[in-house]
Image (cartoon, rainbow, N blue to C red; front, side):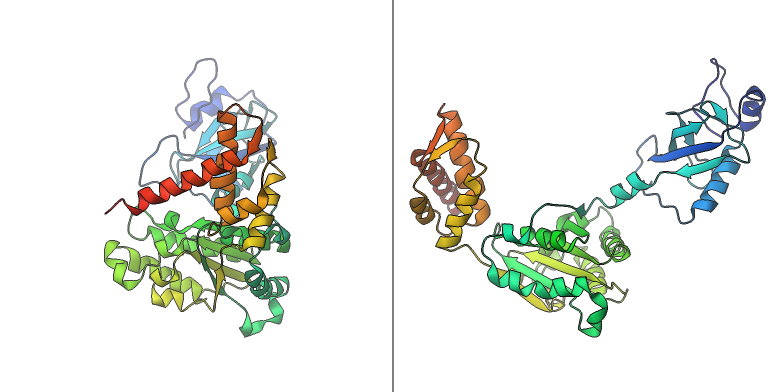
Length: 374
């Protein structure tokens, strides 16, 4: 049995020696542990740790560590099923005591669950924060109705929805607002992160994603840039593992494993690049369009409310100059660039001169991209 506990420089090498050295110590009433993983990194080892039965774990741990000294902020290491997996001693009552047959051993799993739910997204975005996209907001009302009362839909329940449109048009923002309004978990993930290093990794990650969403239903899964893992057949030769990933995704979307009260929303800039089998699983495709003149004016006004500098701007002119830009481009490429240019020029007021600088910067970048392969 391994332990990093020491007594006055004497090294303990086994449980029997530890018992003899500590026979005058108090017995521990309760020990609280936190899983911390392996002390080293090795590719074949998995840091995931899940307790199926807390009572059985307590018995397993107590038998293994019987007689060992427990000190807060030190560690115990498993030597049976998962050798060298470490547990931090968060609390020991009393401290510097010995584990006995009556010691209660508890495991903190909150942080572990948070780690496993690293795709779980929380936000403060509301539907009224989204400018425009009236058609998209109307169409997702069915998702709202369903997740509010899943039982009422029966076989007519929506399952898979596709958002498509140019980058920055609000696809991710809408799904965050939807989850926030409904107060349901949102599992937001970039499709590229589902691609594993080894054969089978991608399928496993997809299965785990849907499993976690199902366990916390009603919930929403949002797979951004879904074309990265669901390429059209003509592109599959570019990636050897695409068939395995596509098949796994199809299995989950078909609901072979019951994913009751789980909505899957995929997002892509180009729906024509999707594998037909995957695209056909989406019962509805919702388009996100670029903002019109009135919507661009509202976007500009909303962003100027949080601007850290004063400004003297012709908003109607900016609306005309930003035609064809998404809401994100207006904020990130125009207003933010204008703000930074103002600061760099040692000025305290953002003017149209700074806006013109930002507009010209976009034109230069677009020209460079266009001529890159000419």
